[in-house]
Length: 114
Length: 111
Image (cartoon, rainbow over all chains, first blue to last red; front, top):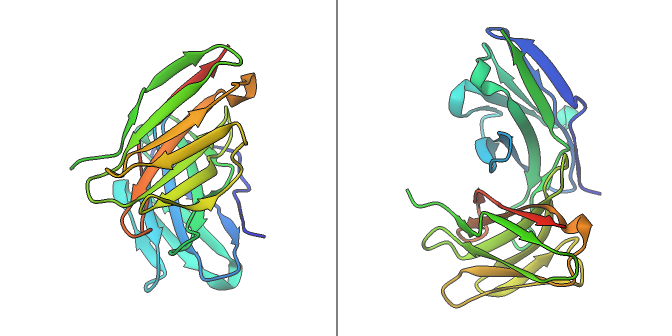
């Protein structure tokens, strides 16, 4: 069955500290992987995506993610967190084609303390 | 750049009423997706349309129906509303079933 696991429900980091949000997936075919960010009551903004090629993907707002096929992981990283990064982060998996619905993880809520 | 438009942004209904949510995709996008996000939940796929035909179906209740019109906009019709239908409903659009771009969502509250 297709699924996405985000093991950390809630993470708190200090401003300026590094961040890594974990994402593991289970998908029968070669997945397309995404990270979205959602501020309270807001829509989903795409941070970055992996379709193929270089396994280290750069996104917006200084985020990057690394696809590791052997570990079925797509962890999101940022070297220095800003207070404005406080939000909920969703990892998602999908596929191009007739059945390309996105399957989301349960999300990780990031709090940033001064 | 033009984005996905959803209307209304907020909707309050009573139990057993009906609701219609509208989605206007990015111009030239031919695929529309609907997702439901309950309070504190992750978004769940409901249904999608490609070139005005239903292309995939997820956990959409029988009380809900949707369609995509000739101008590619889509409507999600919800009948016999229940308290549990209170959620944020997202529409996303894509070109040729590629990367999905999400709208701001419609927040439905059922009282």
